[in-house]
Amino acid sequence: MNHENAPDGGNHDSWASEATIEVVGLRKRFGPRTALDGMTFCVHPGRVTAFVGPNGAGKSTTMRVILGLDAAEEGEALIGGVPYRSLRRPLRHLGALLDASALHPSRTARNHLLWLAHSQGLPSGRVDEVIEQAGLGSAARRKAGGFSLGMRQRLGIAAALLGDPPAVMLDEPFNGLDPDGIVWMRGFLALLARQGRAVLVSSHLMSELEDTADHLVVIGRGRVVADTSVSELLAEASGGRVVLRTSASAHASQVLRSAGATLAATGPDTLDVTGLPDVEIVALLTRNGVPFAQVSAHRATLEEAYMDLTRDAVEYRGIPAAEATR
Picture 1 (cartoon, rainbow, N blue to C red):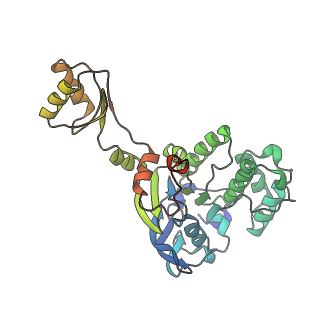
Picture 2: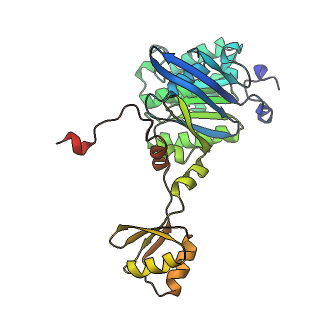
Picture 3: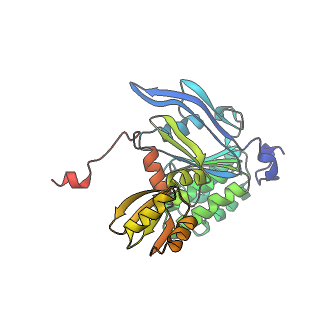
């Protein structure tokens, strides 16, 4: 398929070679500060890749380099094997939302999108399609300057979709959305991935990414700290821990230690157990007449896993509340 001539998407199955964002060895400094220090990762088609890291880690700079807004001193960023600046009609290859406020306030939503569409050789009918996709049908003829942040986010999403691109890059797309909008965004991102697009999403909302992302790229101080699937990261962070609540802690400890488990008391009647699966723990306790109220495998949250990975990469750290009030 010639994607230049198919703004309606055509055969999405042929996107595999186009729908890839590659970042290879990016290095960039701002004066004495190193913003990117060998940044390398790949966003593959058919999945949502979360791009996360502390403030100042290099997320925004990386995205700007991908779009050709900043130049790297070393390395390259490619969309389907081609630098963004070399694309004749870039919105047909990569749709991006970096700043929802980057629009002309006196233009209506529809006119804003028409201007973008005409610059890319796209038909005006495509504007109406993306307006409906983004849920802005009732606000299409309102001036964008009066939009809330959530509505500006939706307008930015519509702009990113104009060229029906095989790759999409969104910075903090959940910002400003109400609960209904957040639910919509989750489903929308999943749909883009199911269509075979490469989807890169930067966000600080770990709870939303946990339910949305398939893959995770964690960065700190300009480098990649982790590049893994969300499920693998959570399994590793959970560490095979099982939470046991029992009124007979001493007896339970004796039985489980003899079976090779490692235990740590986390409360008067609560033990953390590692080295044995929860099913085997239940069987051992039952067989030995040890009473228990709870046996459950611990599942780490994405926020816990993220905090552990970036503990040494946080550049701007506030004073804990307990210390600040002394």
